[in-house]
Image 1 (cartoon, rainbow, N blue to C red):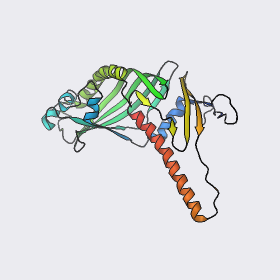
Image 2: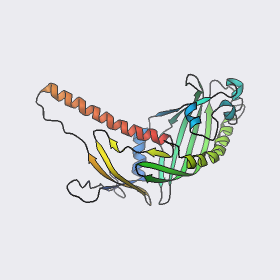
Image 3: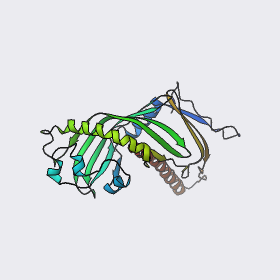
Image 4: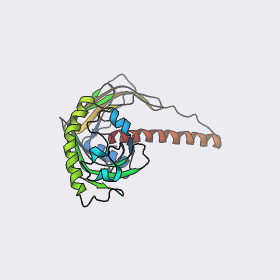
Length: 273
């Protein structure tokens, strides 16, 4: 990937003992990368009631609590019903960098299920959620401190709760979650929940590269990182037999799928933001 103004091709320095290579990714390039991964694809992330409760999330994920956002919910599914959530991206996120902070804007779908994911009650859609946060690298762990969350608007869809239009549920959901964000930000910054604001980075991509050292810097309008890689790629021996050639091609195809899995995992981590 190359962009003339900010992106410079890194020198891997594999032939000498110079400093590790540095790579610069501008906002434009990073957004294009996630557009390829998430623009027309949805990646689900399931969070059960037990997982949400164990994370010390500041808002109880039950029908009684959620009725503050969705009037009449308990009339249709009962009081104090434990709920689980299936989170999906709605399109690709958009990043904006500056030399002091990062901002990400994205839309999100949340399917609300019963505790065991056997019955879906409704779907919440958050439009244009904007998170302003600081980011730092501690060893091989990416840590973020959230400053503010804002949302343009939200909507709710359900085949079970039939009074959504009469109770103006879309407006109430928007107001409820913009209010709830004031409690979520302190929770994120105090507990740094894994996968949300505390994201371990892999030090090794199997059969591809071992990362010995990694440094990161957010500058005026691009993201710069430096790493010291040890490449683990093994070349296949030359083969003459057609059958052996097919085996090699199949192995290379599996390697390509493994690399695609790495990109999907990056996208799945992003969803937890």
